[in-house]
Length: 497
Image 1 (spheres, rainbow, N blue to C red):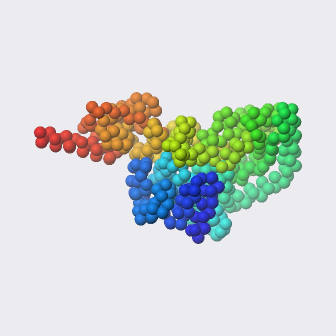
Image 2: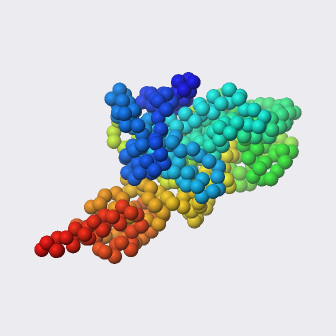
Image 3: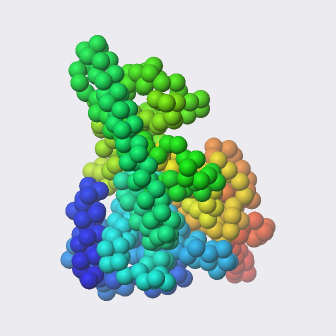
């Protein structure tokens, strides 16, 4: 039932350690059938990044606001904005437009309040769990379930990764893999189980050896027995992706097991790394220090691949227990939630900078979502932002450009817009007095065309007024309308005079 789903989704929100308002909003979203009425309403609603979805039922929204307050009303409305559009795996022009609308709502919702996206992620997660539990897939497959799984795998699993909620990301990937590719999943499950059984003794020996050597090192340094060592099979979907991307057969995949070392302090992380590299030869180019250089989502760990016993490649991850908790629960989600709903307006300068950087990366990530090569679902938590993020936009964002104010607010304008369009988008007076702008710290003229991820600071002068030739500069109907209106008013004043 919808109530069972709503309560289940609220449980996922609770597991994320969000506040009571988020939990209540998840229940209300799941039980009221909240939605926006149309894509056009949705698009219009986002002309101002602080405006709730225009098509959201006014009566329902007012009822929620009166009963539960403005905060919860805005959260439910925001989740409804995202949920109004269905993701489609499509290369058609229409399909790309639908996807652009979906991501437009997603990105703007993130800019307003990260809780909106977390609630939607929780709702999607529980919906998938319900479908998996019901096991209603027939031999030919059920289109609704397949669509839900495809949407989740293509959008929400990578989003969970980007938010740093790796436990949720892996659950979504495994479930979607089972639904979308049942035969491949079953075959891989059997093969991995067989290899696990054959390699059980090897894994146990490596774990025991590591524990012994780390214990000796801890004793010598006076730190005591603080290391925890485990070996686990990699998740099926990560193996499947590696086979697919590297064009390898199962027999060619060597690193089916990953080893994890948990310690108490950062110093012990590097000490453990020294022990590992002292025992086994590191594989060149396979060491990554995410402690000194954390991921934008808050993830920290040391990753290394070494030639272990019998010259077999083994992967080892080393991190503190606190880092491990952040990796499971979502570091970015935690600090972004704090900065968007803390007791003081905004957050610290450091929090604001990290939130801003994260939003910029999310724009670039979403821009390339329809390029499978741009997404990396590997277990080593590689960046989702592709190396070619600055290249020409693909069809997904052919009608949209996402830019930032100096305060980190996110705005969506039509592709081809100039800085003058942006100024009018913010406020008519700002546009009318605009003399230029700083884009990414560099002065540019009014006609400068803005691009995805730009940070734009409008420069104005009260002596500046609109000119007729501005009509050749602007791209948006709003800016054009404001300029024409000012010109007509001037002509009217002159005729009266």
